[in-house]
Image 1 (cartoon, helix red, strand yellow):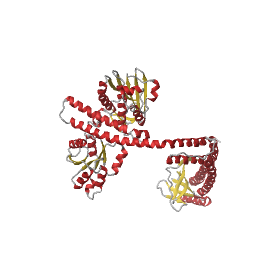
Image 2 (tube, one colour; image 1 turned 30 degrees about the horizontal axis):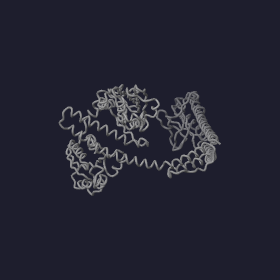
Image 3 (cartoon, helix red, strand yellow; image 1 turned 60 degrees about the horizontal axis):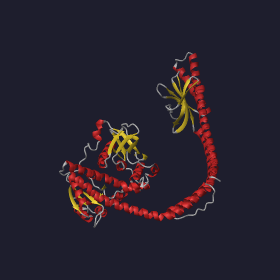
Image 4 (cartoon, helix red, strand yellow; image 1 turned 120 degrees about the vertical axis):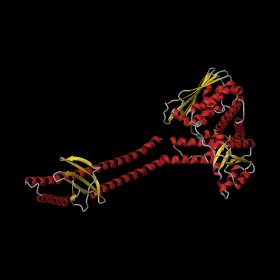
Length: 631
């Protein structure tokens, strides 16, 4: 029996439930019909009995010529009241008459005064009278009412009927209906549940149990399920899969451990000297240099910054593959970012005798919200590849937003194209060009070098940004890589550009004279960090291990500590914990971690140890300033 037939077995009880619900809906319709009937009787009593009685007495008074005699007016009104009392006894309905002019009660069969709220009442014209009717509260009880005005004596006449009897009768019907429906639902549910359990849930439970064993034990399993339907086929596929998993799991664990160890070593060993390169380049720019020396130092610092971003993305490759990489969204000037990148990469293009140009379509005065680091890495990879394979050729970069940009930030699609006149890619290799460690030809590696990771990383980063990378290429004529990404975009009025530009906006200053303790074991990195902190007008003391840092904090007189994580004698984590355990106000001294580790889960671990924030190496003046401002 196939799954389709089993579903039909479940749908039949569902249909029965639907019928029961339809019956209940019919009851509700009847319920409203009964209420409408009660309203009709109430309004007819008002118009055909009460108002007719009042008008009859008024006409008798007029016919007798006594309409202006107070004594006779009172007598005829008294007859009306007696008739209403008799009608009250006969029908059980209450009657109330109030003066339109003074709003005082003239007559009432109720013990308390009752003035219905006609604001939300229904209104209808009956026998020439405008009648308002609905539900209200009288002495805390629900009542039905109908009221109208009687012009001869300027009365407002109201007929009231207690809703208790009606509601009690309707409640009995409602409860009986509910009980019948509940019984039907319970019966059908039991039948459907039993059928589902036998035909579907039990097989699925067996497969689920087997999958759990595979996940926990990583071993082959056997599933006792003899069925010739899709679930039976799925069970047999799970058995085959578990056998293969058992073979591969050991290899995967070993490979994963090796990869994790490699990334940890690479993170620390590359970023630590890179911090020195970037920092010394920054310090060099603060000295007296010739124009040529200043340009070289500027390019050196910019190149080290790009290298740091490249390392970040390469070290995050394992996160991208496992779906754990995070998108760090910020708002920035995309046109300026791309222009700066093209200018920087122009040196490589010139060295390769390649012309490099850039043009944007609709990015002027536009702010884009996305992950600037990942976008920059994608463009660097694509442009660097294009330059490498376009010797004595040209590379053209273009960027645009697909939708018009408004002053309000809204979703948009960013498209960046990198077109070159290089060697091109053979058609049969296009489908594999984004595979890891793959280039279009093995001879490419020997001639041009490279690991074959650039395009793979770029594609995965683009997909992480909600887009993709496509390529068209002709051998001997060149290639065009088109990047798409989902972004938020908004336009800026010209008079606000300076206000919103971080470069033009006044940067919040750091208080001068901060007493900073720098704990750093690497001599070069210590020189760089101390010089940068001194540029921020800080008074810096340097120690080379965590034990000395904790001891110096305990002595007092320190406003903030910059603590390297990896140091001899005592590392930064243990030193931070020791500071937090001090029995004095020194335990509250802010501690900012310095680390070459780029993984955010490690940063979380450092903060759990007591660090207030983390500055990732390579250390920059801006990063140090922001960390101090955050305190």
